[in-house]
Image 1 (spheres, rainbow, N blue to C red):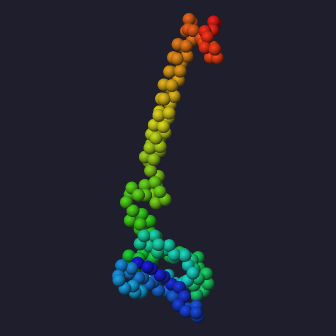
Image 2: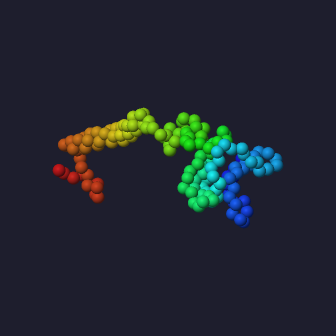
Image 3: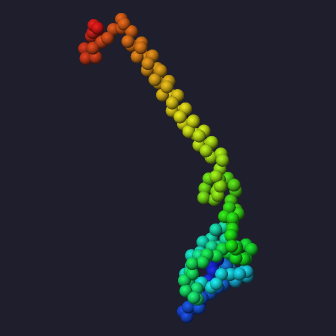
Length: 161
């Protein structure tokens, strides 16, 4: 669907308060007036945002001047609303908005998940470092044994201690 609300009708600045729609699934597109309960006052030059089944109308110019009002239009129920649930409006499954802007409360499991991830990273890093350190210490002690022959790296000749 293509939805249009308000606007100017002609050069005489006659402001329109109609809500019109085109069903784009039909083979012939035709504007149809939508019967709507309690449309906001006529306006043009407003900001319109479509959020799922809601059209948010913000500001614009009315017959008495600029407006700072915000209206919500429920396009399924064909009426003006005063509040709405964004998750219901967008019809999102719970998994799609668990950790996004749509989540209004805190997830009690979020901190435990973070701490589990942190533990896994620390263990995955510290265990190899510990094993490498132990291997180095063992090698170092073995190389210090008395009686081991040391060679000069340039001449490859044995060097006395």
